[in-house]
Image (tube, helix red, strand yellow):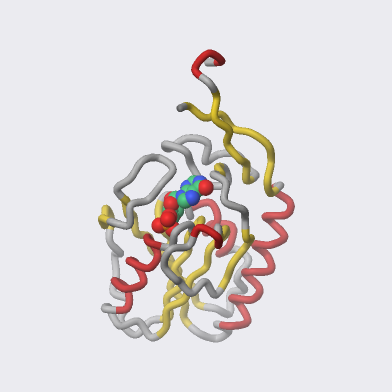
Length: 182
Ligand code: IMP
Ligand code: MG
């Protein structure tokens, strides 16, 4: 089965408005404090780079990244997560905000949360642009959420299908195409 990019689910101006609101909330919650933002590569890169600029400078922000790969096909995760790139610095005693593009089953984040907790941060919260709540198989706390979306595969604004289509400025659905149409 092959897929093609289809209609716009969330237009870019709505994403920008929501990211601004999230940034302001994070700004209030961590005012006067340090905050280490940990982006999960590669999907969260575009969201995180917009989000960080919406957090007022009285929060002392640092940025780090982790890359994980979950064994599975292009549209599903298996729950077995491998760390491809770990953080560059220690999170011990720090306020950590995990920044994700999307929470689907929750398996990736629940694994990462467990791993991060063992490293004894001062606090640990999750910020995800998208949430496919009805697909959740393990509970994960998402303190900052952009949008709840239905159970449909989406691309754009950093999210990919087999590495492609991250560069759409909006969030779009994908549709299967029959071989005959290729
Ligand atoms: P989870 O472990 O099932 O919660 O899956 C989370 C990861 O699967 C996300 O970080 C994405 O990389 C990927 N993913 C889940 N749903 C989508 C989608 O609709 N589009 C693109 N990637 C997705
Ligand atoms: Mg991801």
